[in-house]
Length: 357
Image (cartoon, rainbow, N blue to C red; front, top):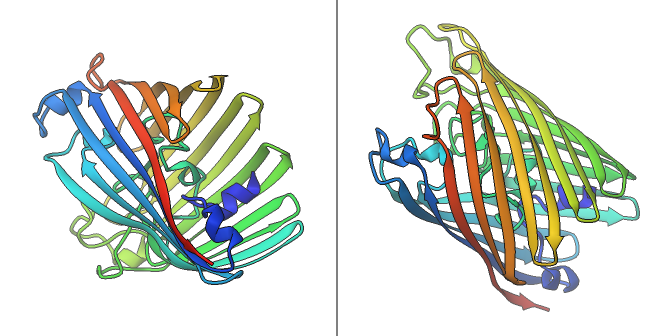
């Protein structure tokens, strides 16, 4: 389990490229979905409650030799895609480079080290290792993860990272150009170094516990909550702390995270948030599974809420997965079933394109 967490990130390196001395591989995951929610018909979107979306994830990998690899992950998606976008205006198509990094690895019995330089997923938390729809048994992400204005971005950050394993322990340390609390392009103003890292221990095969943390300036002068009288962006750090657990045995898989975040300000009170989720998947038959996720969010600046998501998955073939899911959101400012989401998702893995020697 620790090897998957450290070495796979968002995508597995293809077997052809691993076994060859060098080579190129391009694998693709394509997701199409339809969803129904009354949020889509409310202001500011004011559309119809039934809508659809697609997402394509491309994973190019060039293995230069036994130690050096170029790894990428490019996402092309329509909007809205996730439930947190149901409250925004308009439709569109957006491309994100989630990963683009050069890796150097040394792997031996019971120990390894990997150095990465380039655009990286944040080292905070554990869900991003299951970001691909083939690995996420449900149709939505945990509430802490998202593109913008979520505590943990899914967008790539520019920087460097070191991963290491020793026996049952794994470690990671990362320095990037901006905080995962507010990702910044390398072409944006107000970029300040931010670090994240974590460690874990595999107690026994299939059972891992871990911790992670992040800290660094997160504000920029165009941030929605950068008000007149605020101090210099570099003087207001953001921080996060988390614990995670993963357990798998037979037909069962269990994941969970608890996270706490603080964003400091000068002009307004500090913003604090804590969140957590527990996720369970049970294989019912070779082609069928059922999954559940329960989570909560509590914050100092808004009233908290909790969500409960259920999905049933069916595999028509080895390259296709169909999910039918329903998410219930409850809170003091949520009226009835207005925030609930029903969804059908079809996930396909396309044949890989490989050139190897």
